[in-house]
Amino acid sequence: MSTKPRADPSAVIPPLAAIDTIGHSVVDDAAGQLGLFRGQVCALVKRYRQGAEMVTDLAAG
Image: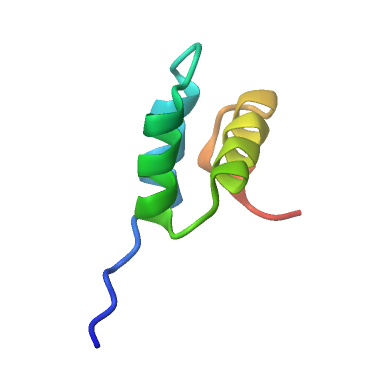
């Protein structure tokens, strides 16, 4: 069984954060790329927007 490689959050989240209103299909696509749930993607976008909009904002902490 082969596992599909997951996308790097630093390549997926910043472009989403630049969108004012993100549709469900876009979030679902990002979740699939990252191997996350929809809510987790939304939380990462929110954290990125509330921070300095740097990749380090995505780090757990």
